[in-house]
Length: 324
Image: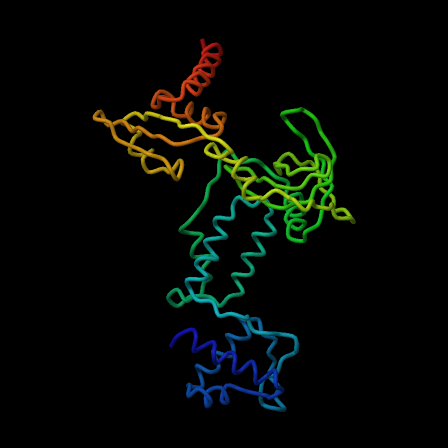
């Protein structure tokens, strides 16, 4: 029998109880032509897995709610939905606030368990043994700072923060209005309107030393820049207002692996007779790309432009002075 038909029985039983009627397994069985054992299992399911405050009234020979405010879940969730939610929990490893992840797990555990043989186990428990996520080179974020930033973001309120910049080597206090949260290459970034700079700013959460809610919201300008445009210009080696074509040659031994990767939606690739991979794509900023190129060592060669070749050569010269 489908989950939808089961839920129809749950809804009918719930509605009858809410209407003040005392129902038992026999009533449920007669209305839906069930066996008494199946009807009783349904009632136990509603009580134990849907957390309904059911109590049997011996005088009236039926069940009632001890809490009239209880409602059934508003939407029936099938196995595919639970798998998707459980997978989201496993992928949520980048969230520094353990309490938020625990709350998501608790939400999933309140959904009726899926049968695994003769044992009822939650999809989350089954999935955790099959899928894991490991992160490296990620920036640590204080969980309370993360939580307050998320709360302010969704509440549309402002924060007073103390921010440390490694570039200017200064620590400043400012009031910001959070507008967008982004997880980019291992780091959490909060895009916010800055009252100090009167402009959109990108704040790395790992560099925020403290946060404090403020009573008065920071007013936003009527001509607030578009967030999509801001993130397009400020995140990624291929992003920005203007771009330049880059050409890279990958050695045959890593060509197959690199060919599986997407560096840019407009990238063009070809295989040379010797098996090397030639990759062309537009970029707006060389700084991040230089690090990626160096990570491949001698298995990559910059073909163009000359400016990028020069930056890589200079960095190699600096490294040579350290190790020679």
